[in-house]
Length: 398
Image 1 (cartoon, rainbow, N blue to C red):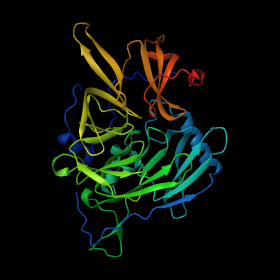
Image 2 (cartoon, rainbow, N blue to C red):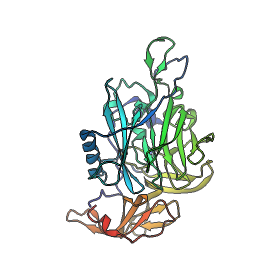
Image 3 (tube, rainbow, N blue to C red):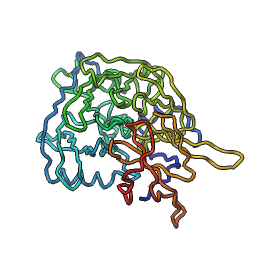
Image 4 (cartoon, rainbow, N blue to C red):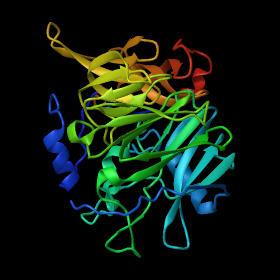
């Protein structure tokens, strides 16, 4: 399988929107490289979760997503690794010219899905076509923030047992136009629902309501974390806060802590916060990543981080002046183990337990690019991080 050279730091081209102009003034520089609606009441999202069957076209959409899941340009979380299966996320057009979100579990892409769920309102999977100058909500204006696998509008837990989706914010009634429906453009006025599904059975596990602009969400093996803010950034006037919802005691109240950093991913029982937001390429573009527990207590820091991988791994780079080269390595934040990528290359895969990495020998192709050769072992985000050598043939030519 040809892989994107993992050590390039790429930036997606952006249109010059008000959101990006605001961010450019507030973000920490990389190392290398409004109007307000006055509302009389806030409407909470009434979410509907129902079982359904996929049409032939919807099944074809899922098939295309499965074929593109390892494409370096396919960065949106539309196909996620679960325990002994894959989760496909696609759309359904409804009679009222709106769309709902379909979530389906496949255990064999050539067969029928194990289950399929229809979600309304639609997930907050805003694309470029939704990011016009006439954006109808703060969340739509900030569409870039929810496009990663690790902290985007949809993500999966390290043990592959839960999948969560951020839904689009509801419409509110304006005091100036009491009979019209508008979505609040002021970030702090927004109300959003996040739903958590059992990735094996498809059953609803928990529904979480949060206030403020959603900057990101992440799942540990037993909790949902959602970061919100009163602005398009967590620091200063953004008043960033992370709310944590238990998935084992689903009637318990959430806990929360304040932060000026961006929620960027998670491990089995910890959260990964970044000094930079994650955009389309799941990369924190040479940032410092801070590992905290579910109460916000600092556990570790990782400098020169270039990418956060689903399941709790971090790819980072270190310049070695004596050798005049950059050393690339992958750090397992769950176990603390460091893997040098000089002679091996790590690639994301679905392993039997869900998110995982496959470590393969490095092969240089005829164009001078690094590719993964023969798989040597694989790692699971769900266990203690030991090497697995069983069934390596499943990763060949995949």
